[in-house]
Length: 255
Image 1 (cartoon, rainbow, N blue to C red):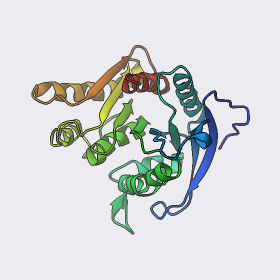
Image 2 (image 1 turned 180 degrees about the horizontal axis):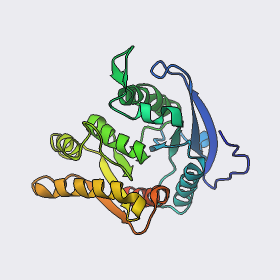
Image 3 (image 1 turned 90 degrees about the vertical axis):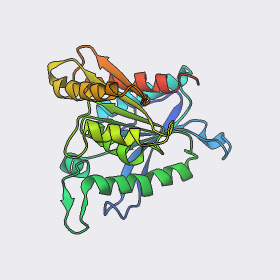
Image 4 (image 1 turned 180 degrees about the vertical axis):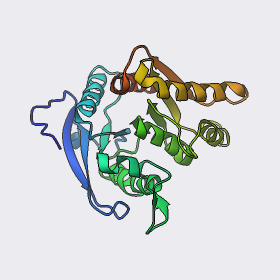
């Protein structure tokens, strides 16, 4: 990882962890943002857990960490545990795609990453750092697509999902995500935040967002908790940095 010696936070300490994994075949290293009060809080404290994809984009990722720090400092959100998910270029597509079948285990990369997150990493963080408050997962672009995948599979146990500049691919479609939400009991789906910019480079993602909007508007009897944001003139990476504060201030509006 890049050096963070000069990075300072008002409300958090930056750390890192290595999570042992059978699913991915090697230890995975993650940045970890912990509340400064962590060591002095009771073990009964339940911190929200924010899973933040694309740690490998370290400038964008660091900006998002600073945004969380500022929002916490100004009382817009509670102190939380934040874990970064690094997906290096050579594995990013493989681990977030449903059509990259691994011949030795007959599972897609998306399923392998899912099992790592849900069976290994997230339970470990929740137990070790009292992060048993709301589970919030945020992705952008390809990992935004992956949050649609997680909505279908785990939208009943995740409290909030952020899909920023996301798209649909293969069997993960606007209809399949809508059907997954529709078939759950009321109030058991994650609050889903979806955004895209209006710049030329955001056209694909903007169209995907509007496609989902259209499907949601067809059946007025179903009112899933989905919120949309349009970023005027925002480019692809800017949309991530601008959407994260929007989502967190809205989700924690009653804090």
